[in-house]
Amino acid sequence: MDRSILQRGFPVVLLAVALAVTALAVDELKLPADVTYRGAESSPGPVVFSHAMHAAFLDNRCLACHPEHFAILRPAERITHEEMDAGRKCGVCHNGRDASDVKEDCDSCHQGEDDS
Amino acid sequence: MSVGLLFDATRCIGCGACSAGCKEANALPLPIEPETTAYTWTVVEEIGGVNVRRLCFHCAEPTCVSVCPVGALTKTAAGPVVYDEALCIGCRYCIMACPFGVPKYQWDRPIPVVGKCILCAGRVEQGLPTACAQVCPTGATLFGERDALLGEAHARIAASPGTYVDHVYGETEAGGTSVLMVSGVPFEQLGMRVNVPRQPLPLLTWQVLSKIPSYVAVAGAFLFGIHWITQRRDEVRAYEAARDEEKEP
Image (cartoon, rainbow over all chains, first blue to last red; front, side, top):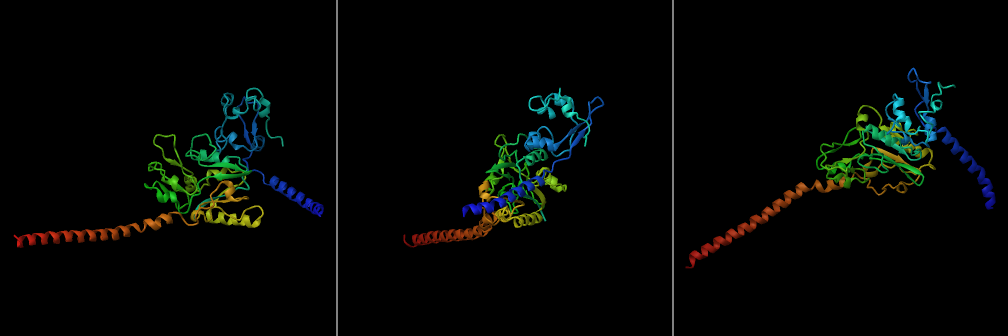
């Protein structure tokens, strides 16, 4: 008796789980679009900042960057390497320990235009 | 027509963007504290896996406004309950009066005033949404006309009664508030007061205070009457004593 209920119930549970997962996947975060930083003439190439990638990597902890290191209401500003190298802005995490180093790992950020 | 917020606890992921936006829009000092203070006007608390925002509910008839002895707090026609720091004398009456425990005190200042969410009154005046609603990446906090948000809240509950508890917090609490909340778990489980009276709380004191002028007038007349009678008696007694003295010698 119990088993038959379980057997009949199981596909329903599976379907519910599948629906829930789909709903979660469809309800993606409304994050700002990627920002391309072109930089100066001497720059090794533009940097494309992806909100989606950073948010996913930081487990959606917006407070890791906002509002202390980057304003959340104002649009993206100009970021200089002096600031980053001094451990501010991107340099807060990109210090070679928590993430790639702004002073050495040029390629990890200066990947050029979006290839797609 | 006044504005408000609809917070849907089932959609909140606890990212904290609302707190960040609030700090920035209102030029509040960092850090973002774990609970609301005079400098942190909104936080997201995680209770049993459910994320719930803490912020001022912006009552239609706010108790804080009715008790403020200097009129520092006001309910604007647009919806926000705002306060004038320059007028605040730091008496903390509003803190005691608020049924939701919202206003907080600047305990670290020599001349403290209160602090609380002002529903981004300045931004709202410019036709902008509140900062928390603007930055929310999941739409858990929506900004709009209160009537429309209330309709949306009921529509969500009706569309998926299994997901939500049948209660729009703020629809009737304290006579109705500009901030509305819907949730998948009962609100008492989210650390919220559910025994808040359904009538506007200032009515309670108004029932007493409105009668005080008549009581003063009636009681004053009564006491003056007693005073007049006793004085008259004394006068009569003195007159009779004087008259008797004249007769007797």
